[in-house]
Image (cartoon, rainbow, N blue to C red; front, side):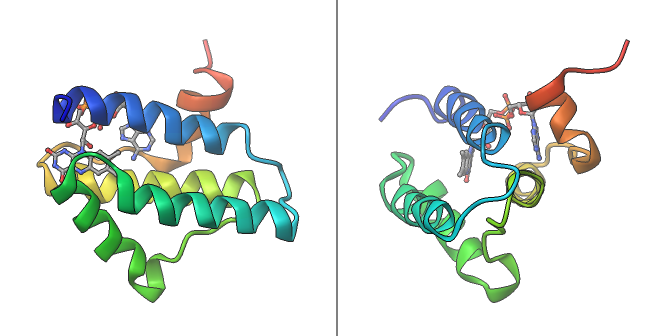
Amino acid sequence: PPDVEQLGRATWTFLHSLAATYPDTASPAEQKQMSSFLSIFSNVYPCWHCAADFRDWVSKPENKPQLSGRDAFGNWLCIAHNEVNTKLGKPEFDCKTWKNRWVDGWPD
Ligand code: FAD
């Protein structure tokens, strides 16, 4: 499989980009589609131990994907990413700023 770190950086870019372009308010069909994607993603992500830990985390009721709209999804994904950051001993990202990083850019 590809390098776990390089794969991870590319994948987080992809995942946060999904949130950045997710509808402000998602329809039931859009929510269902993203829910299916996340479920499949968590089964096919080609770092198997990463995928297994991610599945465990997502399967807890309190960590259910929040898919009602962009803010909810972006914040949920930020929390999911922080879970991995913590596991790897990396600093937590301030989720109040996820939009600066992935949607709007940082203020001057
Ligand atoms: P990354 O963590 O890849 O982050 C990329 C950029 O995203 C950062 O530079 C920062 O600007 C931004 N960012 C950081 N945190 C957040 C956040 N919370 N919200 C929004 N933006 C943020 N690696 C392992 O070794 N073991 C694992 O078990 C593991 N599990 C993973 C599970 C998943 C689902 C994914 C996608 C990746 C996993 N990885 C795992 C890879 C790991 O998370 C990193 O991608 C990799 O270590 C490279 O880290 P990095 O420091 O370059 O930044």
